[in-house]
Image 1 (tube, rainbow, N blue to C red):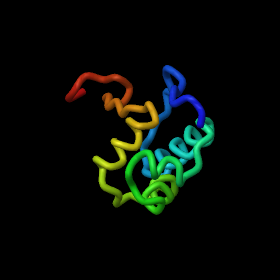
Image 2 (image 1 turned 90 degrees about the vertical axis):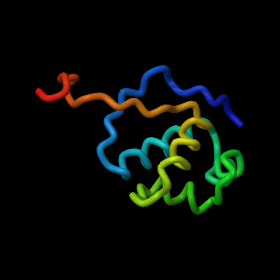
Image 3 (image 1 turned 90 degrees about the horizontal axis):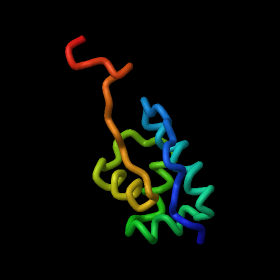
Amino acid sequence: MADFTPPKTLGEHVRHSEDLGKLVRQIRAEQELLQSDLAGLAGTGNRFIVDLERGKPTLQLQKVLDVLDLMGLEVIVQRKGNAPYGE
């Protein structure tokens, strides 16, 4: 298994569940993990990882966040265009 250290900044805009799925698949492959490897490490079923990578929009958010954390990733929410609230 490869090191779980992703690039410092990915800078990816995720607007749809499919966007997140593609990103997870890409980084999992870069970490040289099989879907079954990631599922085992995350304590989920293989089906959950498959659904996550396919962009299934109804997955449990906490489980998604747990998998991202395990992969060395985090979600950062910011306003579009860095505009202050209400503008």
